[in-house]
Image 1: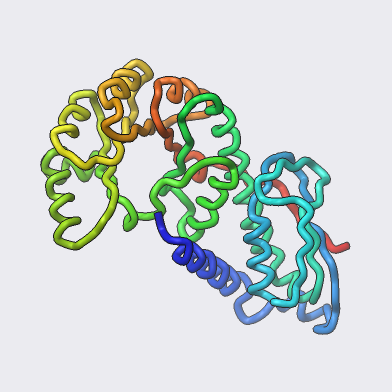
Image 2 (image 1 turned 90 degrees about the vertical axis):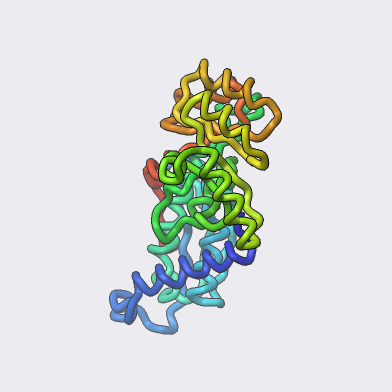
Length: 285
């Protein structure tokens, strides 16, 4: 995974780019009718039940827009919320609050939706050893906050991007000439370039799992699109040789059954690519 310093940098990039995109030359609607000296206060109001996420990110946005804005948080990231709850109050320059409003709402609505869905998966897996993972199926440009939301919801992050872990999937394997060839070439590349990266290899059948074990140093096997019976066989075959991960169209309806097959992880792109924003609003008080 990426370092904390890299993650912080990603957050700063997201905020600066979002403000550039939304504000441009200026918030003329606000500048036209509100005095520069005006002071105000607003509340973040919950209009739908779920798991709140993005409170700390909102503080970061407000600080970026105006270091003098003050945030009083009443509810923390990861807490359950219901209709009518007030998550925080923000006070200070009215112009600054309005400038940050849409970015705060867009981010928190998206993050809360992801956290809410992740929490459903995590709750389903309770009592098993299996943990829920996200994927790289994220919204371009805001991956950092979407993966942050997964963690807030009780999930775990997979690799952040293409550069922090090796994942040899079906296309890599086919283009490289097979599993053994793909692994061998990968190890040589890592060695020549002095890279210390974990290797995950996708398996499409039990025979492919057997072939993977002809090579050493595999961190995890991705058991892709297996049915329950074959997943159990795969877990038994792998044993404690490396970690196991089930993937491929796993839903809330099927996640528990895959977990009961004994895999270490389940990954689901739906955590980030198929959610509906939680309804929140920022209202003047």
